[in-house]
Image (cartoon, rainbow, N blue to C red; front, side, top):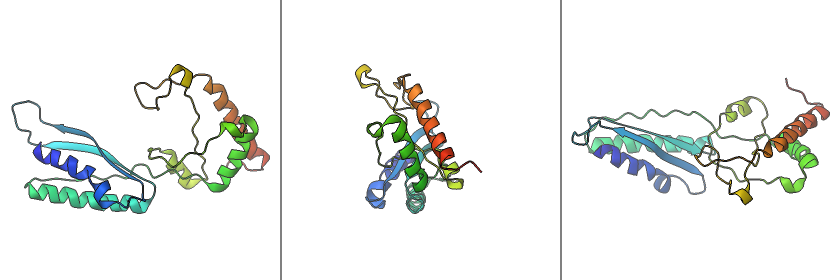
Amino acid sequence: MWVASQLVGALQGIVAREIDARSPTVVSVGTLHAGNRHNIIAGKAELTGTVRTLDPASQDHAEAAMRRVVDGVCAAHRAECELDFRRLNPPVVNDRALTTRAVTSLESVLGPAALHQTEPIMAAEDFAELARVVPGFYFFLGVGNQARGWTSYVHTPTFQPDERSIAVGVRAAAALLLGELEAGRTAP
């Protein structure tokens, strides 16, 4: 348990001490499982977590730092450790040309005021794998309702979507598809 707790602190410190502040990176320990009784010292522990970046070079740097930190902390405490680092979801990168066409299509149906460009976020999304193979455009459909206090993000216990957004989503999807068909672009 002691070594695991040292690892949590050391891993959480990688971003602050190892990563260029201009390169958005998240290193988070999400779970720590150890022991089975309050009065017995745990013989082993398992930590799980996530690393999120906006580019592969930052992911490489974070992985190298994690390997060095895990090896160093474990060696300092004479513990055996293994880092199983898996790259599950690359960053989502929208295709520029497709994004330009999509924005035009969405504005024609929803109006320019309905669209808001966002800064890159550190969400993990398997859509990124598809966008690596074919041009992709990933967007968010706003489903909150400020007046009702429905402002929680997805994947949270308080998420409450406004169902009126379904009709907006259908119109948006139809506009995107029709825009591509009108431009003479069809799926391969």
